[in-house]
Image 1 (cartoon, rainbow, N blue to C red):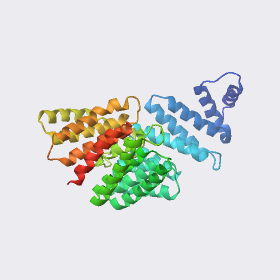
Image 2 (cartoon, rainbow, N blue to C red; image 1 turned 60 degrees about the vertical axis):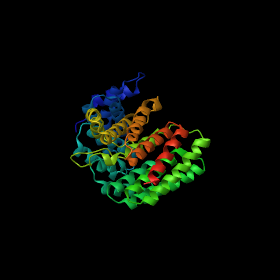
Image 3 (cartoon, rainbow, N blue to C red; image 1 turned 30 degrees about the vertical axis):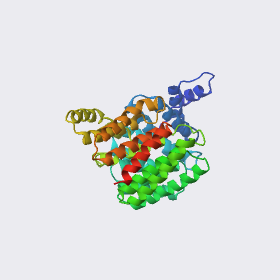
Image 4 (cartoon, one colour; image 1 turned 120 degrees about the vertical axis):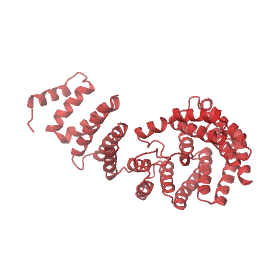
Length: 389
C-alpha cells in the first residue's frame, strides 16, 4: 500500500493541535495513522469506529462501521493490551448489526468467530432462536465448565431452557436445581431478594410438571407458597433495586410452549435469555401483536373463552418482553392484562388448570409490583386448585 505522507502529516497535526476535533475528524486521522503505526493506532481506530456506530441511526452505516472495526481488531497484534476485549466488542457489534438487517447467515458466522474468541452467549442464543437447542446447551455447558460465574441467574436459566428445549428435562432440572440452591443460600444471607426465590421456585414447579414429576412440582409450589407467606407477613428483609428483569425473563419463558416451534426458517426468541434476542427475531415476535389482537376480538365475539384466554396470555407475554423491565407505572400498565386473565379463567368453571395458571401469573406479577398480600392470596388459591386435581 502506498503511504500518502501529506495525509499522515495532516493527521498528526490534527491530533497534536489545540482544537477539539470532531468524532469524524478523529476517525479519519486514526484510519490514516493505523496504516503507518498500527500498534499505536489500530486500538484507537476500533474504539472510534464503535463510537461512531453507536451514534448512527442508519442500519447500513452501522454494519459498515462494525465490519471495519472488526477488521481493525483482527489486525491488532497478538498480545496487545485489551486486544481480546476489543475484538469481542467489535464482533458483537457486527453480528448485532447484521441480524438487525436480517442477514442471519452472515451474523451466525460472526457469532461463531465470537465464540472462538471466548464469548459463546451470542452463538448460543442464535442457535436457540433456530431451534438448535442441544447445540446451544453444549455451548452453555462449555461456558459453565470454563468458570464463567458472573450473572449466574441468566447463565443457568439459559442453559436449563436449552436443555429443556432439547427434551432433556431431567438434565434441565439438575441445572436449575443448582441455581435454586444458590438462591436459597443467598436469600438466607440476605444477598438476594425473596422475590427472586419465589419466581425461581414457581418456574421450577412448571419444569417438573412438564417432565411428568407431579410430586416434585407440588413440593416446589408449597415451598414458594411458604416464601410468599413470609413476604406477605414481613415483606423483604432488605430494600432491593429493580428486580423486573428476573420476573420478565421467567414470565416470558412460561409462554414458550404456546408459540410455534423455532426453526432455522422460522426463528423464535431465545426464551430464557433476557437480552439475547436478535433484533430481526424480536421485531417479528412483537410484530405478531396486531394479528393476535384481531384474533382475540374474533374469539371474544364468538364467546370462545378457552382460546381467548390463551391468546390474551400470548399478547401479555409480548407486552412483557417489550416493556416488562420498565419500572415507570409498572403496576398500572400491567394490571389489566393479569386481571383480565383471571376474570376469563373464572368464567371456565370446568377448567381449574387455566384458572390456576392465571392466578399464578397474576401472583408473580404482584410480587414484581411488591404487592405481597394479594400475591399470596392468588397463589394460595392456585396451589389449592392444583392440589385438588
